[in-house]
Amino acid sequence: MISDEEIAQRISSTVPRKAPSISNTKEVTDPIELKYSNPLPHVLILTAIVVGVATTSLGLALVVRINETYGTIEEDQIQSQDDDS
Amino acid sequence: MIAEQLPILQIIIPLLSAPLCVVLRQRQLVWAIEVAVCWVSLACAIGLLVQTMDHGPIVYDVGGWPAPLGIVYQVDPLAALVLVIVTSVASVVMPYAPRVLEAEVAKEKHYLFYAALLLCMTGLLGMTITGDIFNVFVFLEISSLSSYALISMGPQRKALMASYRYLVMGTIGSTFLLIGIGLAYMMTGTLNMVDLAERLQGVESSRTIRTAFAFLTVGISIKMAIFPLHVWLPDAYAYAPSVVTSFLASTATKVSCYLLLRVIFTVFGVTFAFDAMRLDTVLMPLSLAAIFVASTVAIYQTNVKRLLAYSSIAQIGYLVLGLSFASVTGLTACMVHMFNHALMKGTLFLVMGCIALRLGSVELSDMKGLGRRMPIVMGMFVIGGMNLIGIPLTSGFISKWFLIKAAMEKDLWIVALATLVSSLLAFVYILRVVEVAYFQEPDAETLLKDESIAKTPLSMLVPTAVMAVATIVFGVYPTLPVTVAQQAAEMLLWGGG
Image 1 (cartoon, chains in turn orange, red):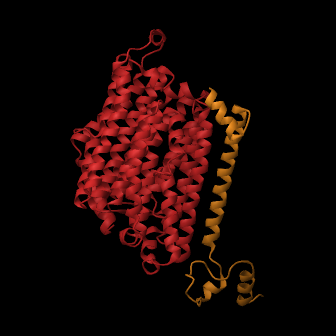
Image 2: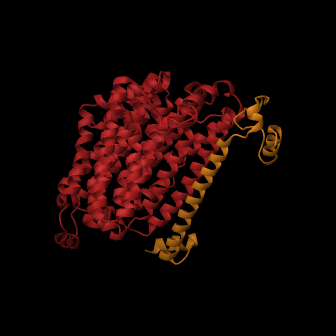
């Protein structure tokens, strides 16, 4: 059996021990906050990553379509093609 | 029973219908679902508005988890007003959509178009209703991503670049928002807006919170296209399909404005934003610059959709101006104008859709003599234009009235005068279109081409007329939006909500 302290130590070795929910000035004394890292920021970051991937894929899809329509992805060439038409 | 669940139904119905549209694929069926969903959403929004006006703000715990741990949906008069704006515009635009869409978007893509439009609406509604600031970010991305896709479906190839530029700018905006939320969370450990407002009390003066405030304001400003962060807007509105322009122009910037109000007044509080951070010294000059620069640029546009897009930037200036007074009258002006501008720009862009279908272009030079060729449609353009100028008996006049009243309360005579003078600029750009349409003779060849084209279908004429009539009705009887806006303004400034 691993003791609670050991679990806390293991967690703290991979993720910041101080839960981000605590303001920087306050000393961490609550035993629960010492043991476990706050999962909420992880979820937030994961969501932000998912959104980022979605945005990137949409952006790349647009670039593909721009390339199909204009035959180039150089902005100045696209500009000059639009000015001609 | 069902009335208690209205806040979640408002979001869940359009959200679940979007994938349903993709699965069903059949064009007419998808459209029918879309119309039904929009009308049901409108019913939900009206129900919520009635409830909040009668019994005060509603707090709905999603999944039964109470705040601050769970996500809550909060509906106060302001949120309910914005919900009504979004859903009513959607309900009017949807019946209008199929005919003009056939001309602009390939038929096999229609179901995807409708699905994206529903997602966009879900995002806008979600941003409005949620009481959780991270949830705002998620809904913002839902609406933004779907609107990038919608804009890229425009009939001209320029739509692709417009959409891409919007994507880059929009992503910067939402990333700023995310950074702001992150910083605020770091200092307070909460994401619930009400809770956030309470916990900010102690740490207000810290540099982190100031930075968070700056990031949030700038991020939302990009989304709202506040001058000088508006560069994505003219192209995006000018080259998007007519349906998308009508919908986004009347709703997207309004929801962003709502978000700005929420962040400034509900989360950070008026004392912090206006006394400590002096936000009004930034926003007021910028809004006046927006009004004058964008209106002047609008005068020189040859593409009428672009002209109206620049006029939108000027109108956003009025919204921000109302906000920057930080008084009850100013906020009322801002909210009433949100409502009225949605109606007037909706009318004008719906008219543009009718013209685009008939002429295949919205260039000013092609619109010669249009007043005689399309008398009803151009008549509605004139009504919409009169609203933009703010002629009495139109809803635009009500907004300007409150705006000038707010400026005078603060003894800002120059601002009041500037608001009046700027109406002249609106007059000039509307007059340019009217002059070409009514007083210039059409070329012989355009007349010949005209014979072969069918008249504007009734399915497009009726929604446009509904919008146009609404601008007059709310100009003559402004009680409804004004009462709601006043109550919402008092709540934002003095809490109690």
